Length: 240
Image (cartoon, rainbow, N blue to C red):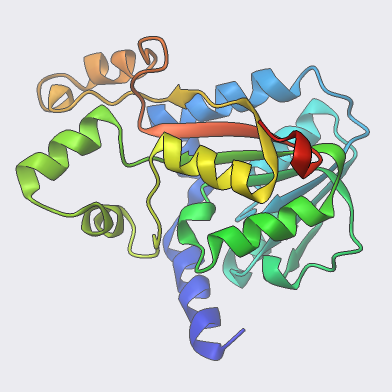
């Protein structure tokens, strides 16, 4: 990793209290609740890798659920320092440098794919290190939500401009269909792909409480600013 890239992620980690944001903002709490509801019924003996673990927020949730074999990697040393203070097992490593001989039952990518320079190569790496029938758990903001469609219309911004306006380190934007097609092309079978956190345009200007309440409803999966995808590794000839 270059010194410039290392400084970028160090500064990024110093300027963002990710765990605090995930607890404060309604759309993050909705994602957290879905995460907990999914993992609470799984075996605590599964081997899990959290790619882009940040300060270890989701690793800590898994540990509190009783999971025993959790590891995280990230490029931000400032975030990893906070994760280590929580007693979590983390390493400063680029996902592209993961040894192909490593094996995990579950790989997490929580708000990570949109930051990557080579997303398809990253997904191929994850496919290779998953055990047979292992799965990838992704959360990502999507560009085809109701609110972002409206903001693009009103602002005249392109998809890329709007995505980078939300976070200067965002390099990619996906619709639900685009992401699912990418995962299938790599060799994954889609198990679940719910849209979450439906932020209605303009409602927050009039009532933050109403806006927070409405985020809970995605109207049969039609709306939602965030997408969670659970994708299973299968033999490529069996991908559907």
